[in-house]
Amino acid sequence: MSTNKIEEIKKENVSDGEKIKGTVKQVLTTEDEGISNIRMRYFTVEPGGHTPWHKHDWEHENYFVRGKGILVTKEEEIEVQPGMSGYVEANKMHQFKNPYDESFEFICLIPVAEE
Image 1 (cartoon, rainbow, N blue to C red):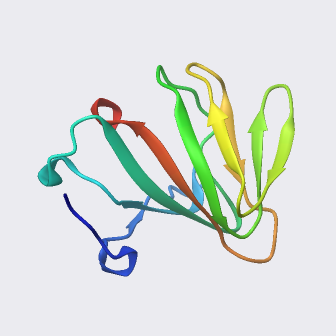
Image 2: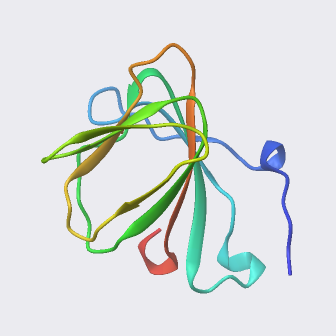
């Protein structure tokens, strides 16, 4: 068993200026804790920021914690907000955007092997 305080977890700026903008990642669970299946990550997307437009071979689940954002796919754009969850299928193009005036924060779960 392990517990962590989010304010004590290292923040990694994953922005590159173009593909990823205004985005910070925190890895909440690690293999060092004996967690072998699921990786839990916390993302903060600043106003005007976005994650990359991408797809991957694994599904992931999200829980939206603070602020509002847009989950973008080829087919639609869905406004998400605190208290909502989201599921992105494997190999589906997607992106999270924050066109709003406050930070957008969410938890993302993926398979450990993909982190």
